[in-house]
Length: 270
Image (cartoon, rainbow, N blue to C red):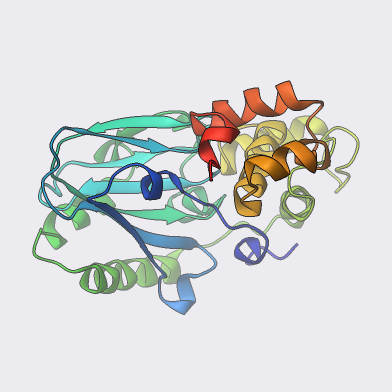
């Protein structure tokens, strides 16, 4: 797989806002074409009017690393690492968060940061990449529109990309490609043979992705289910969980709930 082709094989989905609050909107915006190999999207999560109570935002497992901050308080900015399960953020009843979602492996490539140091948690960005934290602090405020936010991010990341040397280890990216091409449905011990030992492959996945090849495959498999958007009826009749590599329905429900926070029937209720 080409280093730059992750986007062509993988579409990380964050579906929960659309189902959770009437006056909360979520938008994604594509970066400059020259950044499409590195950044999946810029995103905005905001209230359209004050809510009657605080909002609980659930982020599903998507295999990515995100930078995010409250637009009215940009000096407090964070990075969220690879998560193998869903994460819930308690928010106020009025907010406007914006963020950058990096495609798998690209945050460590751009910033030379070990992804496993960030896994399953979020961290003050100033402790990880202080220059980017300073850029956000001084460049953003709550009067900016999403197109204006995009322009500022584009300018910053285009300059950054031009200055970075990337590690194009074909053996690692071919292994990543096999997982993505097979939607995570493969045996990582026997079905991945790209010239790396199991120990080497695990070490590279932990550095560039944030967890093991097996855990990343589980998240990819879960995301493939989300893209399929099955109805409750098709979940029962088509036995989608078998095609997606789950042992049985109980295994499927347990792993799906671990990644999403609710059962498949609730997530896909029609």
